[in-house]
Image 1 (cartoon, rainbow, N blue to C red):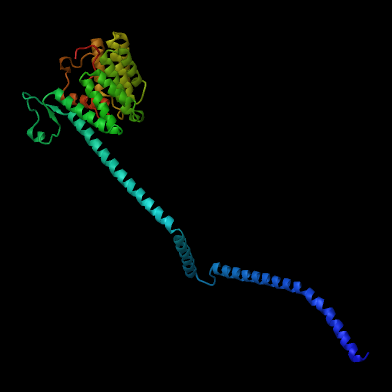
Image 2 (image 1 turned 90 degrees about the vertical axis):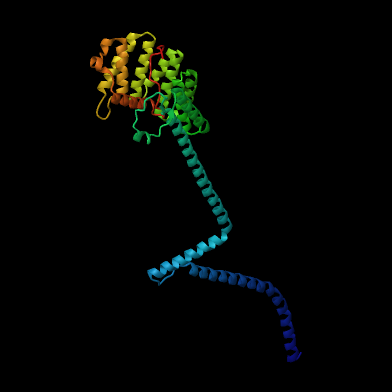
Length: 363
């Protein structure tokens, strides 16, 4: 075999040996391509992360004013973006808030207007009850220049005045029963019914006030209603129940209601024929009124005078008349007593409570 033939044989053998090797290297090449793509994708993500980090990074190399402007611009841009993303929710919230404000304003206006009307109605009822009774034969004792400015209501008879006050109180209590003015009107109704000697009606009205939330929260309303209920029971002849009501007053607060309850309880004891029990309570009450008096807490002129009158009725020696025949009150003293009586029994807008008298006495 010549050299040329040997060389060709060798090349053929070499080519035959290399052919399977190339076929085996194809999967390795594909794997290298896939790994390259993964590395390129990771590199791109790293570049994007760096870019985003640079965009979010605070400005450097800026003075204080520029840094503030930059932060403000970034914040405003974020706020604007948030508004655009939540525009629908913001619009709904704004509408709801607007409706809420409009509703509150309307409710406040209505409530204030209703309270004003209730107060006016109650004032008119009190004005009627405190009106002037002037008959055709009565002398005009008020000077003309004063009468022109006297706005008190005028009635021909006491009964007409009571009827007008009763109607006004009932109308106010019916129209505004859910308000404090309505309960005060109910209390005024009880007082007028008591003065008309409608004891059942007075007791019903007083008990309605006692069961109200206003009476639970306001001591003046509660004690005034309790006093009216006791006087109505006394008028009905139920002296034991009346005494129990007055004992509740005597055991409560404040001090002037305690004293008033003691006085009423003594009256009931006297009406029941227990003079010794009434005398004992009245003497203790007189001492209490005297010893507890001070410049800041002056004694009740009305109550002190009533205690003296009741003691004088039991035994004239217990409370001798002051000055003998000159013991009658002056007009100034009478006015002060009336004002004191209104303070004791009229703290609820009912300034015309009837003067307490022992049960069974002639009206």
